[in-house]
Image (cartoon, one colour):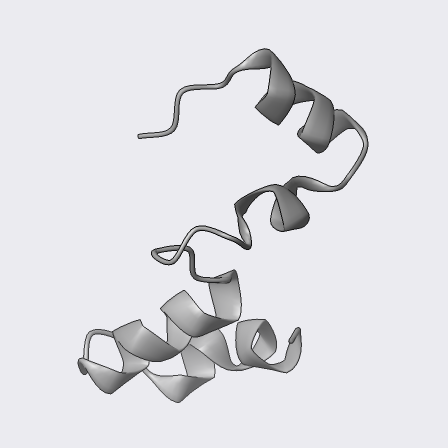
Length: 55
């Protein structure tokens, strides 16, 4: 769970949210998370293909 602070709210509004979290060593992008789910065998390539292409 992420607490939405004023800084995070402003980053969302200005569309800079990805840069807000990129220094967090635990942060993963949606395509990275989708690949992890695929690698674990929890989904199929058909289900996440469009997410993987959105790198």
